Length: 553
Image 1 (tube, one colour):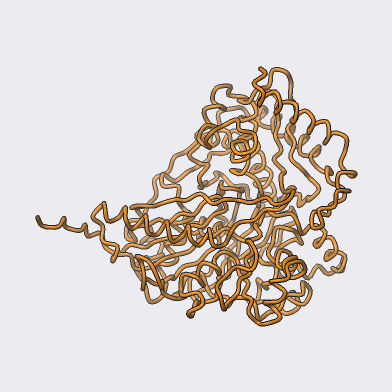
Image 2 (cartoon, one colour):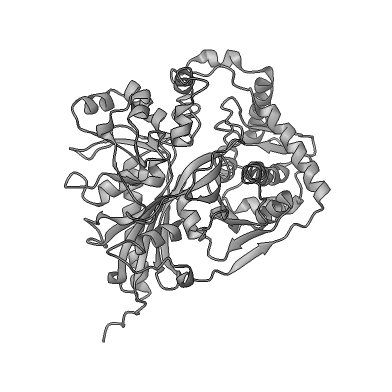
């Protein structure tokens, strides 16, 4: 019997989307932007101490290989020839820090994840060395000194992990964010792997000058980082190297963007003033500011949006970063056990349609934009005997929307021209209650593309458009029209404002819970600095947990 004829679809482009919660590989038709197939693997997060968040770099790499192989198998079942895949793009969780041995290819420590708080005392000590009238760190990087960014994570590794120190002394160490680790490994690793990053990921390290687009000697000296361990900085769209193993061996890796920049490209926000909000583990609102750096006066970051080619101009963005969005759903599932799957949250919230005065501030890693307040911790307030898990589920969804409102307000003040609608993407946008709540709380329409995988799409676009690949045109007239779903506000403006002002009250109560912090040493004296309310809430949670476990109603 003759073999089934392979479907001819023209050039295809693959995208690795390596996020905090999962890894995916997706394949798109470069002419229509249609998603043809994908595979996803959840990634474990480790919490070795309070405030510490780590992942296994080898597990991350293995998940990428698994996703590529499984996707290629699925394409085969669809009679799609994988030889049509002409390029691969990489999109990744940003700031997460990896140091590995270039001779063995082995990581020298777990990846220290962007959410990790262990470096708070490092940040406090460094901040004392920045002159009040000359914040050269912020002026060069666009970033506040925070546990969020890679430089302080790398400093911690150099100070605390002997295997890292020894590898640096013996010139064996390489540093990178997740994109660097993946590209080095996929292009050969110890056998000629390419050690590089792109401008968007470099701009999140706090070691990169966003004006000169180079590693900055003064910043490296300030943080005590040896420049020889840093990757080469490239544009977001060029051939970095070829896949050296697996089903796609020989295919060029030619696109690289930090996940939020990738989503900006995937949403086709190429014009000054266009913005998007991505709902993933965290929540990130980016507004394209064109070829000029705009510095925020309201707690937003200035960052590199993209540079789509070696000879192409760099574009910048203002960014509002929220640490905990989808992560709060995972917390309700994994830590409290009130849902068995992330999808259940919508069903619970729908049952009550209100939080009944319950407010949830998920400041598990402190508060990011616009507060940059590391002393904050998560609180649930407004509880009564009537409150049940459905109200808490609803309050968790509202929390994501209120946090977005805060960063949108800051962006509107910085830009001077309020957004008339909000373009959204990311895994959480499949939750219709969340999207409607977001429109109600912002009091503007929320617009969602019918194909929500815009992060992977952005990486694929960058890869397909690279010089030497040239299968994806980024000219405005060639970009595919995207069908959108629109959510209009359904409550009156006054009710929206009342709910928002009550949320702000709750946020103020979350600030200042941790007044002395030394998680690096695991110092038990940290508990002496916690307010009495912490112990009352903790005792209530333990009591409720005990009743729940014992089956007492």
